[in-house]
Image 1 (tube, rainbow, N blue to C red):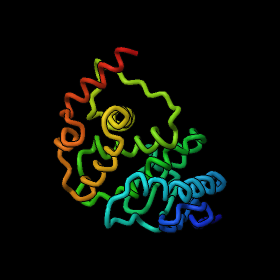
Image 2: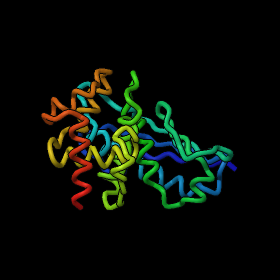
Image 3: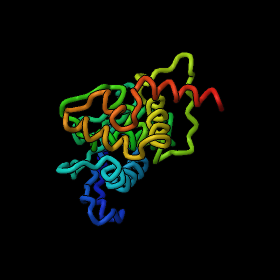
Image 4: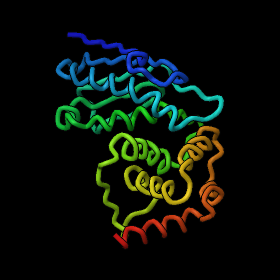
Length: 211
């Protein structure tokens, strides 16, 4: 059995300046996930222009086509490479409500960093998009005694959202811009907020203790 799904982002009524995106879903290795794949495609089509705007930078256009592929025997959760998001079928079967994972991986597609960058920040921005914008009501626990901003993912996402709220609402977009240009340095935090990255982290941890 073969299932191929194509959706156009024009159906999701993106902002006028957002590029149209075509989302193709391949469930040939997991035909039982065809309906889930349709929902994932609709989600990707809707959020592509939203993430593009959140992470906008001059002269950059994200991929206009995105592929979502399900793998039957794949371990783990999902990963993005180029314009393709590969998802473990078993994970979706066991976690059918985890559409936030699609938003996280779609963010990686749109980031488009050609020269890499600190892994903690790359993953932190992807989870920032997921938890600060797509799933803002999700509770994220950070252990002040063990955590580091270099943990990436949820911890870094919560930290970035806090810094934006306290110091610079355009911070993540500027961090993304620097990463995309291959010019990111930790000093950018101080340039944007007046405080070093380590000082910001200490203040963030202190804010957790007060709760």
